[in-house]
Image (cartoon, rainbow, N blue to C red; front, side, top):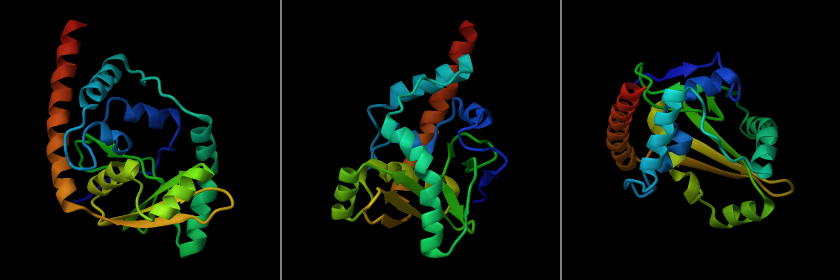
Length: 205
């Protein structure tokens, strides 16, 4: 499998938001499938959101808390910390597509040597304490990380969470073939339905 990288687009830029319109993204695939590999109850709402984006050409409004905004500002520092800890260079990319059809995408926080990806989270201290005590990939990011692995074709992905004054949590996540197989089935069905709904809406305009 040969992934398609868009390194010419900066994450967060107008161009980046534009190419993501109406396209299922790894960060939202928990709306399609659960961590247990079952269809998500949020599937219909996400499908309608993407269909609306395709027709209107506008992104759906999204909530961004102050914590989320602060996390985006701190991401560069977290990326540098990871580079220093592992003596690697993290390549920044706009999006990754699995195939030339570009039916779905991932927007990783970085990739290393074109061999594996990186997901960075800057979290509240209390959240970091919980993550450190659990010592595993947080449940709420299982789908995002495995979806990123599936789309990229990589065999692993690193998850790193950071909170000021506390140790970072770094979890190396291996590809879950069973989950990726279930995700493929759900994604193909979802994308087919998204195309059908979009065609119906276009016929009404």
